[in-house]
Image (cartoon, rainbow, N blue to C red; front, side, top):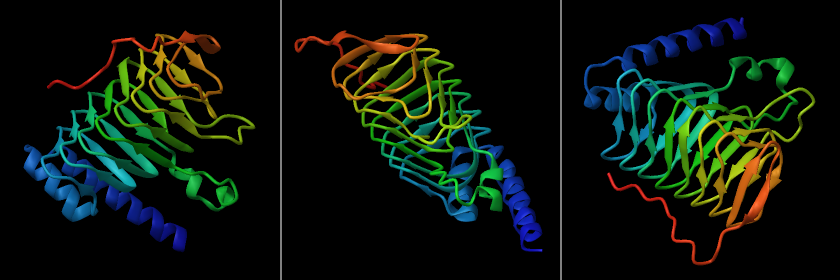
Length: 225
């Protein structure tokens, strides 16, 4: 009986999010998500058309911009700092089955933490069954990267991406992987393990550190819009 009630409540909340996501103005979308779903959305934040948010908790800071056609779905907790920019068509998801009784001892973290002044471009996929952490000022640039936090026999489901780093297009982060601060990850790389070194240039399948960035490397990425 309790499971049935929980499923009915879940369907109701999902329908509510569908309705809010297609409201015609940013003012309505932001304030209805705040009022009806109890999400914490900072001042001057913008939620684009067809941004579907149906999660345990959702907190984004001041000045965040989430462009149209993004999906946040599942029993996950999302926390983002101020001035996050999210491009079109990203998917942040975790299946609701992980909250069933069979998964009680699996220790699924189901958490996404994003720092301040980050950029997530377009069409990326985030499998938030573990903990995915993205440091301040990091860019997940390009298109169609995947951040996968589960797999057969996987016990370390976390992914950690350091601060002020740059990740190119079509990069795959496997469960238990990550990079340090001020790193560059080349297009199409497959990061299979944690590479904790800072100021590194990372690329390949499996990804490895090709070399260290020079101390006088002038490249930086800052939002100028």
